[in-house]
Picture 1 (cartoon, rainbow, N blue to C red):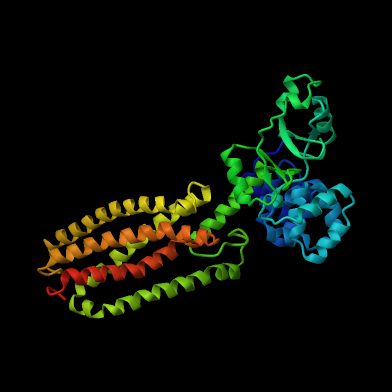
Picture 2: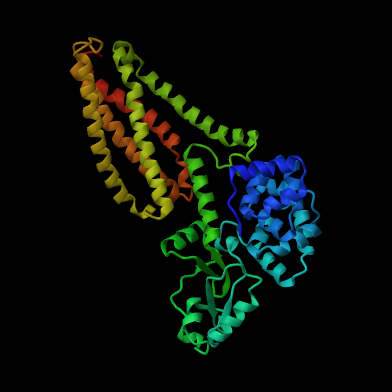
Length: 464
């Protein structure tokens, strides 16, 4: 039975590692889940991590390996030969995990590992998986599964389960194929308990079981499994032949990776290759600097836009007081709309073809928000004018200029934030790159144009 890692046990383990007390260390680790052992190793210095990892039994070491961050995994494997990796680690892993580990190795080491895998079937499965793009269903599926012919009986299902008991850790369903290995359906395990084992498979299997093609994007796979509440999803080729299966634990990893990437891109940066804690300072700077420079250049156009209205600002300095208010309101509105649409696209809640419906909806939302903020902006000018002469005798016109500008900027920001992700999606780009900072930058510049144009129209001949 595995126990959850606690702060107290972590401190004891770290003390045993520092003192190189091997027996006490193994005693502590023996009660932990492989994921917790990976967490322990990840918090150690590299030499200490190697010390702990090399003490583990091969089967446990293999399970821990797949739980480690990619960069630490690479560092730990530097001291292993291709033959050792193949015999001590790869032979212990399911085909999908083995393929993931091998795919990250240098090309020469990868070939050496493959050459030393003795199990011909395991080697064939791994080699096959390495041919698929890592971002597709084929790239995350496992080849290990239980299948029976549609012409057999349930007794044969039990025999197949027993035959693969040591090879497959979790079995959720029995896959049914025809004489040409084409997938025809699945049998829930409970059927083996409640029915006679002499029952023909053709009388029991579910012909409506959902499948996915091997070339399907892994994000679509995760949406399918979430939508239909699946724990396992069979993978087939273009001809419907059964290739493998995707289990819920693989999809959880996909969802976490994709959401992390989207959040980082929406924050105005490139997605990190590794986790925050395992990313180097240079990588952090490199991933963030590019977009910061782009956003800086974009924001510099704000000064250019203000230059066009230098005369108006000189005549009515009071207009400059409201610039932060106007552009931040538009930017915030655009950021909200952008975040909502990007997330809706990721969840499949909306599609690019619905752009007209989204336009009308966001136009209505923008008008309502704009009116609310516009009224609030006018009231703010009116209230302040009762106690100060900062806005002069024509404060009503200034209030109207602020109010109508807020209306215009909020409507524009809302439309920009909601439609720009759709445009990127239509062009085949990641909508997440239309991040909140990027939309806010564009709306800042256009917001100034809206503000000073409206102010010029309302105040001409009075103040300007």
